[in-house]
Length: 199
Image 1: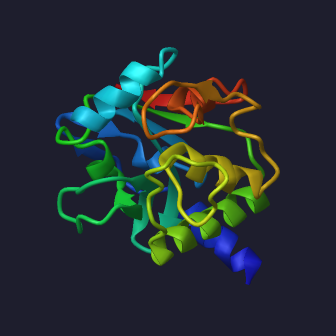
Image 2: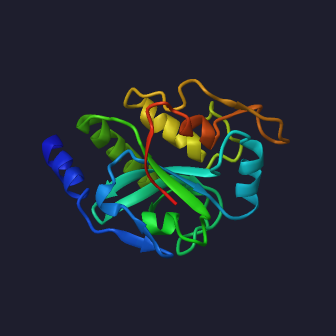
Image 3: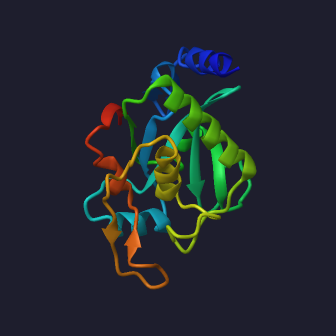
C-alpha cells in the first residue's frame, strides 16, 4: 500500500502549469513537502511583516498532493475567498493561495527529502487539514492542539526528522503574544532550502 501511495504522489508531479494573474505557476514541478511563501494583503500580513524584521514574507504553507492535484496546506486566520470563514488549517488550491486577492509576491522552496519522508509528510498534512485543526491565536509553541502557520510546518517536518527552523526563533514584544514565535524568516533561512519559483 505504501508503494501505491508513493506512486500516486509521484504521478501528481506531472500535471499542467496553471496561471494566476498572468504568472505561470510550475504545477508540473511541485513535490509534496515543497514550502510556499507569500506576502499577503491586509492588517495581519502587515503585522507579521513589521514583526519579522529579517523576512520578506508574511505567510507560509506546505504543498501536499491530493486526489484532485497539488494543494497548499496552511493554518490561516480569517476568511479565505471561496471557503468558510473559520480559523483553521485548510487545504487550498495553489492558484488560490497565490491569487492577487491574497498575495502580492510569492516563492516556492524545496528541501531535499527522500520519497518516504515526502509520503509521510504528505499524508500527515492532508490529515491535519481534514481534521480542520484550529488556528492558534495565542501563537504558543507549547499548545499542540492548535497551530499557527509556521508552527504547523515546524511540526510536520519534525515528524520526519527535520528541524526546519534549525533552532531559530524570533523574539518579539507584542501585547497578547508570548515573546518567542516562529516567523516565516525562521523557516525561510533554512540552509537546505532552494528556490524553485518566485514572482
